[in-house]
Length: 151
Image (tube, rainbow, N blue to C red; front, side, top):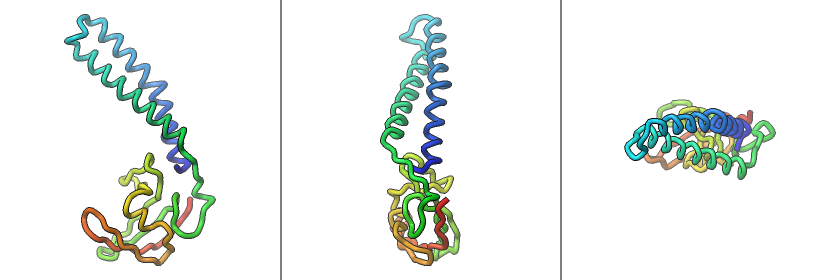
């Protein structure tokens, strides 16, 4: 996991514990005051939210406990975990930039590519100027590696 990914998960964990958890507890207490719990929609919604929050807390604690933080700035050379890679689609000439990150921090909308994705797996070990063939759900795609940065 990158340092930024670790920090983002740690921030989410702190918010869940210090903001979300107390808010859910208050919501449950307020809903209990309304009487019969068997037909109390507010109570059931609050309990459902509590279940989600507690599950997410456990999930993040597990991820952070098992993760190894890698600082991409200390890396160089061929594409590997943490690399920020600029590619050009050889068919459309469209340029895209991705950082190869761990599963927990992947977000394609923000250019964070899961290292287990077909594209990331195809890129690992490649150098600037190399061409890469990738089988995607939309068909076969060809990319050329324009640049590799470790930031």
